[in-house]
Image (cartoon, rainbow, N blue to C red; front, top):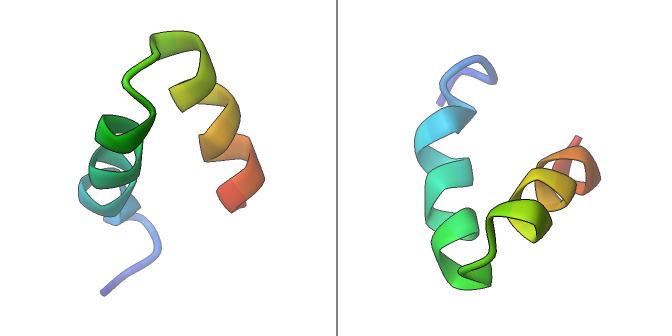
Length: 31
């Protein structure tokens, strides 16, 4: 699971938020 391929993992977390704005903020929190 390379860190550069977190797009797939992040996409799963973004789907849980359902909001485009929150999904971007969660990406920063993940880092």
